[in-house]
Amino acid sequence: DVKVTQSSRYLVKRTGEKVFLECVQDMDHENMFWYRQDPGLGLRLIYFSYDVKMKEKGDIPEGYSVSREKKERFSLILESASTNQTSMYLCASSPTIGREPSAETQYFGPGTRLLVL
Amino acid sequence: AQTVTQSQPEMSVQEAETVTLSCTYDTSESDYYLFWYKQPPSRQMILVIRQEAYKQQNATENRFSVNFQKAAKSFSLKISDSQLGDAAMYFCAYRSANYGGSQGNLIFGKGTKLSVKP
Image 1: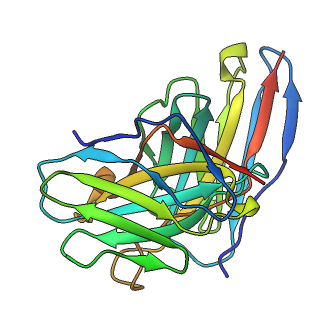
Image 2: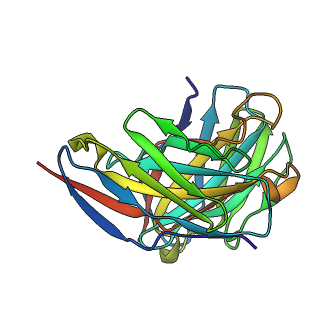
């Protein structure tokens, strides 16, 4: 089974703090994603990565950055946390198309609920 | 740009009954994938069922089946013999069959919260 883990289930930070959210997958997937989930808004893509050291902006990248130094790890960084970044953050991964029959499927981590005070 | 619409923010079903969750999408593409994801209160998002647009046959997974109407751009999820464990948020998602760049990303609807009454 694919396993995607996130470093924290719950996190409380102060406004202005630098926040790191870590995501690790154990299936050698090329693709990794960070989403933000808010009630009534569904999932919105923040950043994604198709390879090590590669990153691309999603729909709502403002206020966030990412790092992918190793294939299995994809980090989301809030340089200076703000209260409007209070949310549930979901990480996902998927293999490259063509590698597996259902490569278009994304596998999700358990989520990190971040509260910024 | 593609969009996914789930018009039912909340649904309720009696245990052992059948419920259908609606999803419509907008795209100009002919080849794509559609998904239903389930997110229980524990928050781990899991795949329920997937459908390839080029397949006319509706996908089924045990008690879960879809009604895929390509011309109408409709992709509803039917849950038969509903169980208490089916209570969750359900998300419909679209993915282009194009492999390049952001075209391969999932586009999600806003979700339908399903409650199951004992």
